Length: 408
Image (tube, rainbow, N blue to C red; front, top):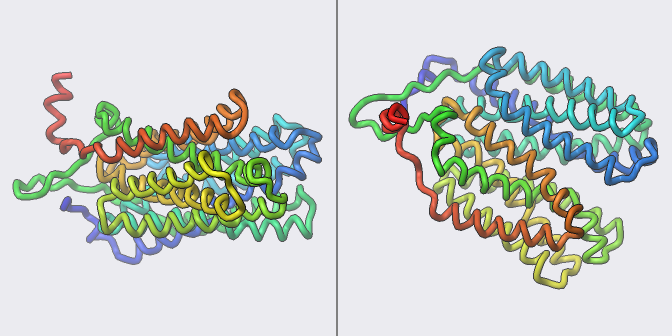
């Protein structure tokens, strides 16, 4: 095992960092309550719900783009300062959302600003926390990303309560203030993880420690990228239109179909916790294989059966469980393949698949019409990803790459 200088740091520092990360992830996860606001925003702006809902697609894209550059920001300013900046930007974005009087202003405030804020804090604090606990990466990822999922569930009740007692505009302002009040103290609890020191002892096991430039030259990197994109596309698309699937394909009442939101939140959180903990007990790539099989089961129900209320809830639960588990296990999986030191950068580029996946499903559905074509494409990608997860192998250790890179 590689040696680190973690032992020179008081144990309280990393536990405080974990606590701060969990609090911050809970606050950042609040953005997944967005569907609660689509109807009222559509009325306020006199715009179709589909155009209002596009702001969440932009938010997801901004989240992914911001996550991909978070490593650079952390190197320059440190995890604490970037996290504080993310809290301030999120509060500003939600304040401007409250003032939005046009679709363009809504897309810029709720989409771009809130998305950039969420992404700047999400991946950077998660990766930093995982580096503090190299011996239990799966459990730590489950705790942090589980908190993100729990935030979406907790803020569903918070924001629903606010909407019941305050105007739409005041709800956004209070939400932003609450998020900032959680994020800034949480940021002050965090500290940058020390750099991993790779042991060069002859009897030490091979240690992988690849830079981003080295990683992108390997086929494994792009195989992992496609698998992640597929998981995000299937999860985000189905989660985003679950209520519409229930009403349009299963002919459920609006109230019954809306129950899918709660089912999805529970399944998503369960996937994060169950698969995250499991990933410390068996090979993480096998956990991804399991997640893909569960997702294929859910997608098969949507594609090939005449659904009723029970099978509908089972199908969306399978897909949400798989999606939640995949995004929990992936940071640790990427560190297994390419090392911990450059995790934020290596995972950051792969994480762009989250943003692309968030808009790709909706784009295909709008271009080709309806759910069936989109489900068929997702099913095809899931099968390809399943094959990839079975055949993929770990890359050679970084030291072995140097002569090849020099020759290149």
